[in-house]
Image (cartoon, rainbow, N blue to C red; front, side, top):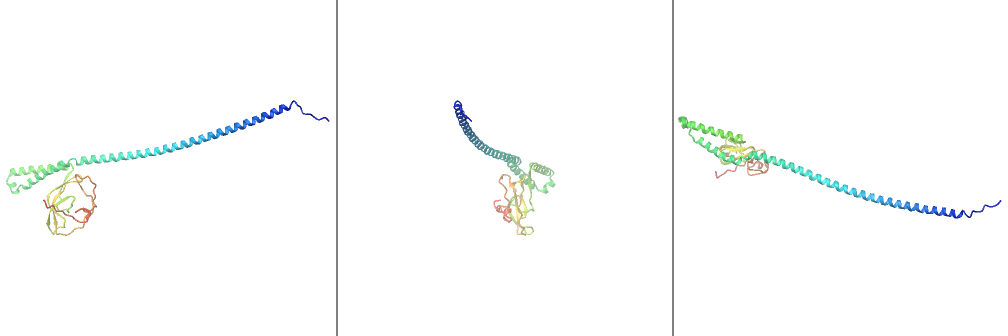
Amino acid sequence: MSEKKPDPAAKPQDQKSKAGGKEKTAESAQEAAAQKAADADLAGWAAGETADANATLEDLQAENADLTDRLLRAVAEMENLRRRTEREKSETAKYAVTAFARDVLSVGDNISRAIEAVPQNEVARDPALKALLEGVQMTERELQNILERHGINKLDPKGERFDPNRHQAIFEVENKDVPVGTIVEVVQAGYVIEDRILRPAMVGVSKGGEKLPAPSAGDTPKAANDDSPNSPDSPQDGGPGDGKVGINVDKSA
């Protein structure tokens, strides 16, 4: 049997095929490495963009929360301003006539004094004086009606317990028949405008009688020009918070 000898012509071709395969393998490896590097760069860029987007989102959320807080505060301030304005407008409408009303009260006091100064025995004998007196009394009643229409009401506290927030004691009277601090005489009537004291009543107060328990704390009326908050429980001289019936007699009257 004869041995098959290799073909000398085929050897260079096989060598070329092997070399070409190696080159393709190297190129594939380079392409794979390049693709891997590109993928890594893309992943890094995507991660960076995601981090930036998250940071931007957090900033926007913080800014939104801040703006929402400012808006709520502004709305609350505007609501408080509206309520305060409405209250001031209402109080202005109620108490706008305070100064004028005080001056008118002096006119009413003079009319009352004029009526009281007329001798009743002379009225019965003199028809002209009687007619004049009736006219003055009608004027006094009409003045009182006008004051009441504007929220100004008269205080005639005779027989009531002395209240330093509403009354001004100008003298004391020894009287054991009534409890201590009872108003036994009204020298000058007081007035209130809505829920505020326009003028305290000038009164004479009893002493020497039975002592009454301290009054319970209630709503303390303001003066007509007093815009401070009431504090009925805070102890004052003769106020309801000190547990005493305080009577500060005005010695100058």
